Length: 184
Length: 241
Image (cartoon, rainbow over all chains, first blue to last red):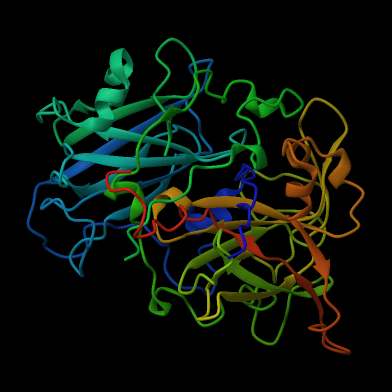
């Protein structure tokens, strides 16, 4: 079989919203299907509803206001197959002013051999190849998670903070508290 | 589901995090190396999309934002190609999303204030799902080059952004398609951040006269390759490896 090299990645640029979150770009009037990934909780699924409040910060400590964030997570039962009640995939752009991205989702369960977690994928202007990181939970037993263990003394950069309605997490692209990003 | 892990990513075809000539990387490039990890079920899986998620005109940017009976301004083009994996196999049933500036180089976006005017009949957003043979096609207008703030007199080559899903999140890819013969490609720090000239050339679409329709629309061919899987483990391979 031939071995083909992967197509090179290029930055999503500052106008990623047009293609991926069109309503945010001001394309409400377009005659197209719905914005994909906007809603994860589609019906009345079993599980704990949480608000996941994300920010991405650059090396100067400023919120990144033109990032696109996708998340991929197990169901509360630890499965990666959703149904008509819940979609395991979500997509939000960071707010064009505040930089905040909010996901309404369900608290993930533990997949086999791992602690509950959410995969986070970030693209933006100035990011040439999408960045992959994870979010773990402060109120779960993470001791035996094989991926979190690899992060060593930087593991804290992967653990969210509990809030009244769910969890909040800050991703730092650079600097002393730089988040761990993975070569998957 | 194919349980074969994805082959390790070949970073020689991708832009490095920090590329000094591309100013926006300065404060956004991680300074620590990526942490290598084994693939788990999380990265081996990913979302799937059905045709029901899309509207009937989603792959036709010439008319999908236009008023009834009207169409977008600019050179009419058909962009088509195949989505392949690292083994050269067609990848069917995957979502491809595109976005682009209009023929004058202006994006329909609240943050784009370029002098070139908006086109009332062009939005710049398209989507499709790859066919059983991995093929995809969009009708659109050729985008214009445009200036961008990078510290100097910088112009982006004409390009179309592509977002592509694979079987697993480890294959997730965003890239840009350029046009054969564009002199801005060699001058663009974003395109030139790709370390391998042969790899960059694979992002350059070719004029395809075979699919060009006389008196109607020119065609450009653009194939996309997703990260492949590891070589098959043969039965005679020692166990435990």
